[in-house]
Image 1 (spheres, rainbow, N blue to C red):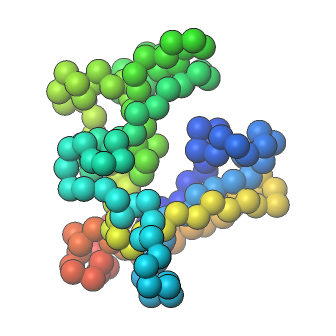
Image 2: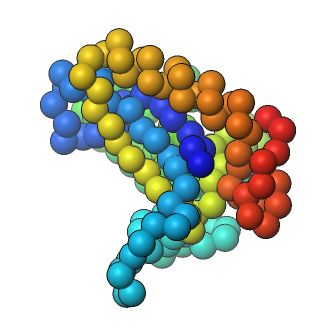
Length: 171
């Protein structure tokens, strides 16, 4: 099952060559049924707790999993459109590890109701992330487009909204 597909940004793949970034895309998929050795770590997505600030420093709000981040490249807040970056002393910012929403930390600290619920939903215990490099920019766009349509058509959600086994729900 595929849950989400999108093009990546420079913030997602910090160590990637800038020329490769337009060819990289991200897939979130179900890792159900994969074989693991006993004692293997369940992966970073399984570390989250239900609400509030957890051990990994993630702030959970309206389905978002916000991580503190500093932007030293031009980036704007997706809530108020003000700058989120500064070369030397950027303002406190948060980025959702699911949907990559970027906001000022102040919006949550002031309990402003301006952040929409996260649009990306998946089961934290089974979802896996994969970064793929396409041969060309056109092929990357083609893959993202085709997979997005397939995900919308299948209507899978793995957050138990459709049923205990991530059953199919209408989009």
